[in-house]
Length: 210
Image 1 (tube, one colour):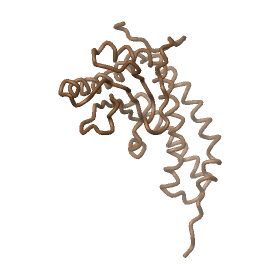
Image 2 (image 1 turned 45 degrees about the vertical axis):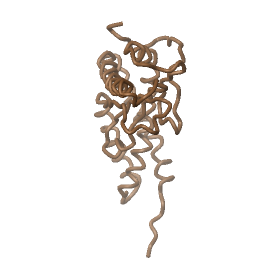
Image 3 (image 1 turned 30 degrees about the vertical axis):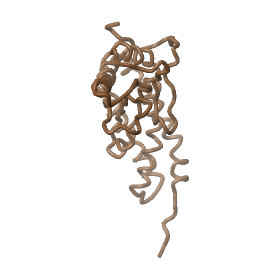
Image 4 (image 1 turned 180 degrees about the vertical axis):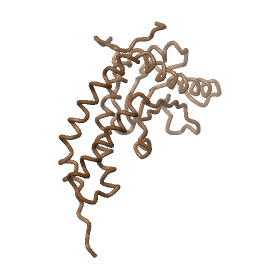
Protein backbone atom coordinates (compact mmCIF):
# COMPACT_ATOMS: atom_id res chain seq x y z
CA UNK A 1 0.00 0.00 0.00
CA UNK A 2 1.36 3.41 -0.98
CA UNK A 3 1.49 5.78 1.96
CA UNK A 4 0.19 9.29 1.31
CA UNK A 5 2.84 11.81 2.42
CA UNK A 6 1.93 14.34 5.10
CA UNK A 7 2.29 17.69 3.36
CA UNK A 8 0.85 19.82 6.13
CA UNK A 9 4.01 21.76 6.97
CA UNK A 10 4.95 22.18 3.32
CA UNK A 11 1.51 23.46 2.35
CA UNK A 12 1.21 25.89 5.23
CA UNK A 13 4.73 27.20 4.69
CA UNK A 14 4.09 27.68 0.99
CA UNK A 15 0.81 29.51 1.63
CA UNK A 16 2.14 31.78 4.38
CA UNK A 17 2.95 34.77 2.14
CA UNK A 18 -0.35 34.46 0.28
CA UNK A 19 -2.23 34.42 3.58
CA UNK A 20 -0.45 37.53 4.84
CA UNK A 21 -0.96 39.40 1.59
CA UNK A 22 -4.62 38.43 1.41
CA UNK A 23 -5.23 39.43 5.02
CA UNK A 24 -3.50 42.80 4.66
CA UNK A 25 -5.76 43.68 1.74
CA UNK A 26 -8.84 42.52 3.58
CA UNK A 27 -7.91 44.52 6.69
CA UNK A 28 -8.16 47.77 4.75
CA UNK A 29 -11.77 46.95 3.88
CA UNK A 30 -12.61 45.56 7.31
CA UNK A 31 -11.30 48.66 9.11
CA UNK A 32 -13.65 50.83 7.07
CA UNK A 33 -16.53 48.46 7.81
CA UNK A 34 -15.85 48.69 11.54
CA UNK A 35 -15.71 52.48 11.42
CA UNK A 36 -18.99 52.65 9.49
CA UNK A 37 -20.91 50.09 11.53
CA UNK A 38 -19.34 50.36 14.99
CA UNK A 39 -22.68 51.12 16.69
CA UNK A 40 -24.42 48.20 15.01
CA UNK A 41 -21.58 45.83 15.88
CA UNK A 42 -21.65 46.89 19.52
CA UNK A 43 -25.45 46.60 19.66
CA UNK A 44 -25.24 43.01 18.40
CA UNK A 45 -22.55 42.04 20.89
CA UNK A 46 -24.39 43.84 23.68
CA UNK A 47 -27.55 41.86 22.89
CA UNK A 48 -25.56 38.62 23.23
CA UNK A 49 -24.18 39.83 26.57
CA UNK A 50 -27.64 40.73 27.83
CA UNK A 51 -28.95 37.34 26.74
CA UNK A 52 -26.26 35.66 28.81
CA UNK A 53 -26.83 37.95 31.81
CA UNK A 54 -30.60 37.37 31.67
CA UNK A 55 -30.10 33.60 31.93
CA UNK A 56 -27.58 34.08 34.75
CA UNK A 57 -29.91 36.42 36.67
CA UNK A 58 -32.76 33.90 36.44
CA UNK A 59 -30.44 31.18 37.73
CA UNK A 60 -29.30 33.40 40.61
CA UNK A 61 -32.93 34.05 41.60
CA UNK A 62 -33.45 30.28 41.71
CA UNK A 63 -30.27 29.75 43.78
CA UNK A 64 -28.70 27.86 40.87
CA UNK A 65 -25.81 30.27 40.37
CA UNK A 66 -23.70 32.39 42.70
CA UNK A 67 -22.06 35.76 42.15
CA UNK A 68 -20.65 36.09 38.67
CA UNK A 69 -16.91 35.56 38.54
CA UNK A 70 -16.34 35.78 34.79
CA UNK A 71 -17.95 36.93 31.60
CA UNK A 72 -16.15 34.80 29.04
CA UNK A 73 -16.06 35.34 25.28
CA UNK A 74 -14.91 32.40 23.17
CA UNK A 75 -14.97 31.57 19.47
CA UNK A 76 -16.87 28.40 18.64
CA UNK A 77 -14.59 25.77 17.16
CA UNK A 78 -17.46 24.03 15.36
CA UNK A 79 -18.04 27.29 13.51
CA UNK A 80 -14.90 26.63 11.48
CA UNK A 81 -16.43 23.48 10.04
CA UNK A 82 -19.46 25.55 9.05
CA UNK A 83 -17.34 28.46 7.76
CA UNK A 84 -19.06 30.61 10.36
CA UNK A 85 -17.36 33.16 12.63
CA UNK A 86 -19.45 32.84 15.78
CA UNK A 87 -18.71 33.85 19.36
CA UNK A 88 -20.21 32.53 22.58
CA UNK A 89 -20.72 34.61 25.73
CA UNK A 90 -20.81 32.75 29.06
CA UNK A 91 -21.71 34.25 32.43
CA UNK A 92 -19.96 32.05 34.99
CA UNK A 93 -19.63 31.81 38.75
CA UNK A 94 -16.98 29.91 40.72
CA UNK A 95 -18.79 26.60 40.26
CA UNK A 96 -19.64 26.95 36.57
CA UNK A 97 -18.24 23.48 35.83
CA UNK A 98 -21.02 22.01 37.99
CA UNK A 99 -23.85 23.93 36.31
CA UNK A 100 -26.65 21.84 34.88
CA UNK A 101 -27.81 24.90 32.92
CA UNK A 102 -25.74 27.37 30.93
CA UNK A 103 -26.06 31.14 30.93
CA UNK A 104 -24.91 31.82 27.38
CA UNK A 105 -25.49 34.14 24.46
CA UNK A 106 -24.18 34.07 20.89
CA UNK A 107 -23.00 36.62 18.35
CA UNK A 108 -22.28 36.02 14.68
CA UNK A 109 -19.66 38.32 13.12
CA UNK A 110 -21.74 38.71 9.98
CA UNK A 111 -19.85 41.79 8.79
CA UNK A 112 -16.67 39.68 8.59
CA UNK A 113 -18.29 36.60 7.08
CA UNK A 114 -18.38 37.45 3.37
CA UNK A 115 -14.81 38.77 3.31
CA UNK A 116 -13.62 35.70 5.20
CA UNK A 117 -15.25 33.35 2.69
CA UNK A 118 -13.90 35.37 -0.26
CA UNK A 119 -10.42 35.12 1.21
CA UNK A 120 -10.72 31.36 1.64
CA UNK A 121 -11.86 30.95 -1.95
CA UNK A 122 -8.82 32.93 -3.12
CA UNK A 123 -6.45 30.91 -0.94
CA UNK A 124 -7.90 27.58 -2.06
CA UNK A 125 -7.36 28.64 -5.67
CA UNK A 126 -3.77 29.62 -4.89
CA UNK A 127 -3.13 26.32 -3.12
CA UNK A 128 -4.44 24.33 -6.10
CA UNK A 129 -1.98 26.20 -8.31
CA UNK A 130 0.91 25.13 -6.08
CA UNK A 131 -0.08 21.57 -5.17
CA UNK A 132 -1.68 18.76 -7.13
CA UNK A 133 -4.58 16.67 -5.86
CA UNK A 134 -5.17 18.59 -2.66
CA UNK A 135 -7.25 16.61 -0.18
CA UNK A 136 -10.15 18.04 1.80
CA UNK A 137 -8.24 17.69 5.05
CA UNK A 138 -5.37 19.71 3.55
CA UNK A 139 -7.75 22.50 2.58
CA UNK A 140 -9.12 22.30 6.10
CA UNK A 141 -5.61 22.95 7.44
CA UNK A 142 -5.38 26.09 5.33
CA UNK A 143 -8.75 27.23 6.63
CA UNK A 144 -7.79 26.64 10.26
CA UNK A 145 -4.52 28.52 9.86
CA UNK A 146 -6.09 31.44 8.06
CA UNK A 147 -8.92 31.66 10.60
CA UNK A 148 -6.29 32.69 13.15
CA UNK A 149 -5.86 35.97 11.26
CA UNK A 150 -9.56 36.73 11.62
CA UNK A 151 -9.52 35.65 15.25
CA UNK A 152 -6.93 38.37 15.84
CA UNK A 153 -9.37 40.95 14.47
CA UNK A 154 -12.11 39.68 16.75
CA UNK A 155 -9.78 39.79 19.74
CA UNK A 156 -8.88 43.43 19.03
CA UNK A 157 -12.56 44.30 18.68
CA UNK A 158 -13.38 42.72 22.03
CA UNK A 159 -10.37 44.37 23.66
CA UNK A 160 -11.60 47.74 22.41
CA UNK A 161 -15.04 47.02 23.85
CA UNK A 162 -13.84 45.88 27.28
CA UNK A 163 -14.87 49.03 29.15
CA UNK A 164 -18.34 49.01 27.60
CA UNK A 165 -18.71 45.32 28.37
CA UNK A 166 -17.86 45.85 32.03
CA UNK A 167 -20.25 48.79 32.27
CA UNK A 168 -23.02 46.73 30.68
CA UNK A 169 -22.56 44.03 33.32
CA UNK A 170 -22.56 46.54 36.18
CA UNK A 171 -25.59 48.40 34.81
CA UNK A 172 -27.56 45.14 34.56
CA UNK A 173 -27.79 44.92 38.34
CA UNK A 174 -26.70 41.28 38.39
CA UNK A 175 -24.72 40.10 41.41
CA UNK A 176 -20.99 39.97 40.64
CA UNK A 177 -17.91 39.09 42.70
CA UNK A 178 -15.47 41.81 43.76
CA UNK A 179 -12.82 40.27 41.52
CA UNK A 180 -15.15 39.84 38.52
CA UNK A 181 -13.30 39.67 35.20
CA UNK A 182 -14.10 39.92 31.51
CA UNK A 183 -12.04 37.33 29.64
CA UNK A 184 -11.50 36.23 26.05
CA UNK A 185 -10.77 32.59 25.25
CA UNK A 186 -11.44 29.28 26.93
CA UNK A 187 -11.23 29.64 30.73
CA UNK A 188 -9.26 26.41 31.18
CA UNK A 189 -7.08 27.02 28.12
CA UNK A 190 -5.51 30.37 27.19
CA UNK A 191 -8.02 32.98 28.27
CA UNK A 192 -6.86 36.59 28.30
CA UNK A 193 -8.21 39.13 30.78
CA UNK A 194 -9.76 41.92 28.71
CA UNK A 195 -10.82 44.33 31.40
CA UNK A 196 -8.03 46.00 33.33
CA UNK A 197 -9.92 49.04 34.58
CA UNK A 198 -7.96 51.37 32.32
CA UNK A 199 -9.65 53.56 29.72
CA UNK A 200 -8.24 52.93 26.25
CA UNK A 201 -7.26 55.77 23.91
CA UNK A 202 -8.47 56.06 20.31
CA UNK A 203 -11.40 53.77 21.00
CA UNK A 204 -13.64 53.32 17.96
CA UNK A 205 -16.55 51.82 19.83
CA UNK A 206 -18.79 53.76 22.18
CA UNK A 207 -22.23 53.32 23.66
CA UNK A 208 -24.51 55.84 22.01
CA UNK A 209 -26.78 55.61 25.02
CA UNK A 210 -23.95 56.34 27.44
